[in-house]
Length: 173
Image 1 (cartoon, rainbow, N blue to C red):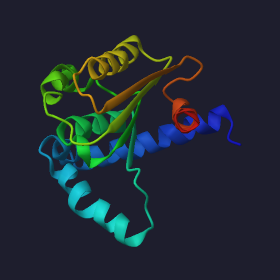
Image 2: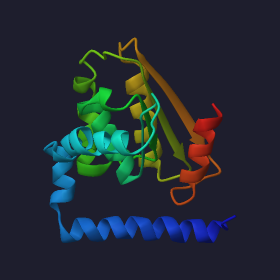
Image 3: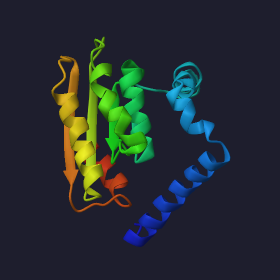
């Protein structure tokens, strides 16, 4: 079992690895906005996984922090790409909350299949907590009949410690 300090150091290390890649190649962030990464996931990554491994009907996308921002964007732009989205402490503050502000326009698209979205946030900066709740409310208030939304708060967790317990919590439900 990892100690709290080990978990924090591991998450910080993973975050900095990702940030180093963005600094080396800023197009990584832009490729989400232009759809390149979404196309890659749909046309190359998912078929590769299906052909290489035995998979089931559940197709889950999990993202935390900047990954939560990416998971939110993929849900908005191509909701049927996965049937279960787990969005943990999403960095919706990015780009002056532009994704959150545009969210309602994406929800006008009719969902063809049932999709579950779970938004989870811990005790974090007020803006991050408010944005996560705003995302959950936006999704809950949409007129999408095939959309199931859960919002989970984990007040004993913070940005560095939430991921593992959030996954565990989702799988318990």
